[in-house]
Length: 206
Image (spheres, rainbow, N blue to C red):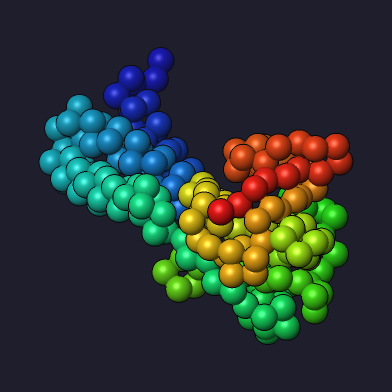
């Protein structure tokens, strides 16, 4: 029969390994934190001060990072939304690089066009997402792409985009529409306050 103490060590090791395989920054930190706490407990059970100290330090580091991330999220400072030209090389390269992941969420997206309204989502001045829309009326636009990389998806960039970013205001847009796309994208639209209206989803914006 396996030693219960050893099982605690194996569990902690597994969680640490799993955390390092995660793309999401938030999930990585949370799972790594749990693994470190269990590993520190394992160190106490086997009376190993180095194991306790190392994993105690990792726990503190993870808590500090998570605290910073949650403060940024609560204050909506984690993301920044900036206007870009649809012919921007950075925009086109970003879309091309993430084409496969984009297709999983919004398979109806066909590519960047010259008539698109375009925004890039930044984190610490680095591009992590893109939004493309086409104007349907003077004050309405249809969102054809609303994408953020997996590492930052847990921080709900849409709350910033559709909240007080003023991204749409500068173009005189007061209503946005979107198609459903994948099931995951439909859930996202629901969380962002879109209402189902026939074959499209609609949301008023500030």
